[in-house]
Length: 94
Image (cartoon, one colour):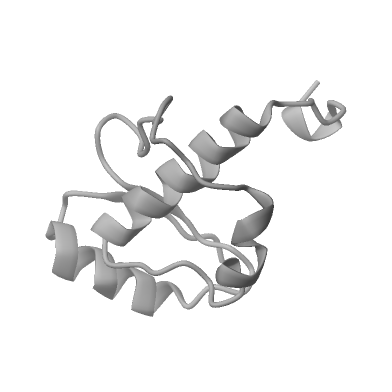
């Protein structure tokens, strides 16, 4: 069974805040900004105390998996400029 085949799991608001805000902090450190619509939905998460901050990346490095609407050249350029060539992993299919 793959994770896609598993039903969604309920998590607490604290866990949701930790996931979302940890990822945003990590991405901003790599040169990426949250989607402009994040500001509209941010109020649903409430204020975060920074407790439970999660480690992001894979094996201590950023790891990019190309999504269907991504501009991989732009993303790889941003990663290269901000963390340096060879300091991140990526998977681009096709």
